[in-house]
Image (tube, rainbow, N blue to C red; front, side, top):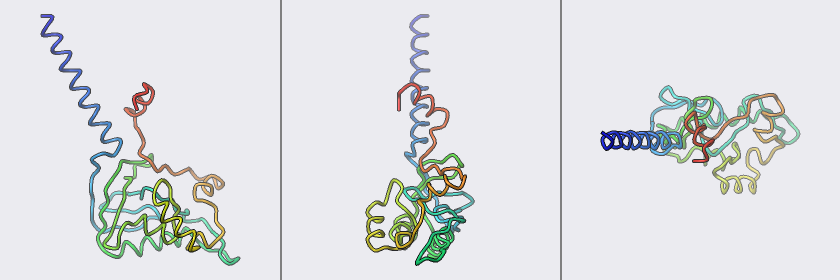
Length: 187
């Protein structure tokens, strides 16, 4: 009796560990899904693809109501970022590789069209700032004074803070299991 109970306990423990590993892999974005199709721009760093809201990882763009100054005149930089993303999306089908979700339940992903990586293009053209990715492209845009870098602007996260807007979250949320693992010091 003692041996079978111990074997059962070990089996249950192994099953729990395997399930935990699968959940952790999903939360951390490993084995993310690939989705493709026609997309439309919601703003400069968020798109809708096959009914899913997708947040481009590694970049941050001005909010739709954010206004920058270029050559002393107001420039609706948030609208400009959205317009450029919309233009890039018209190039054809979009393919996104997901890396998890954010607190708004948007998929976090790197996306591309036949024209290349969308985040890379937005940062290189100066319509997005690097946020955990695309630092080389941002250096190029700064040096060339492209887009935002040729204007006076508040960093998008600073603008949101100053204007009472919630801060965007660019990484996958850990969820309940992640919180437990963090509390146990296992992450």
